Length: 170
Image (tube, rainbow, N blue to C red; front, side, top):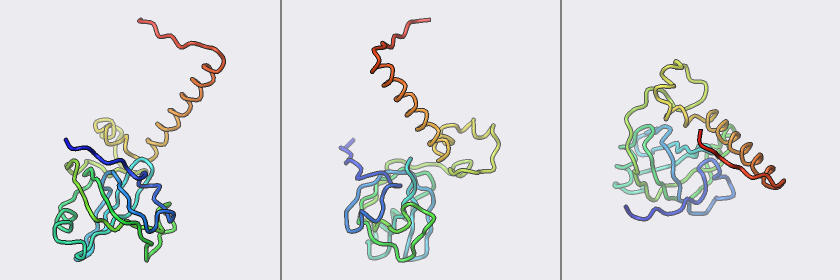
């Protein structure tokens, strides 16, 4: 496998500060909107969603790749951050979009049994069966991150006060 380039930042952190800059992003396809000669891709990671734009000026190869995308495909996207003509005040990244210069499909995915977002109407049994998908939902990720921060703070406190963490077999 060839060497993967480091991400510029997480998708949900690409704000107006990045306008005019080139970025390298990794994430899951939340959804694709095809308007004929213009495609919008919502790319999601643990920090949120950023809109990716592909149009016929991007070239046939890039347009073909964008048209082949499905939900939950894993992508690497390179592009230039530009100001959005239609600002979305409900999104942290709503002032910008990424004009794609390259899209690499890292992994294809089957259509998931439920949409990866909060407030979904799906049974707990289905969510548990597809736990690996449920763990991608924003509320679940926030809980995981909070738990990690609490554990780190607890370990730091004990370490600063001379405690030693010892694990013994059962």
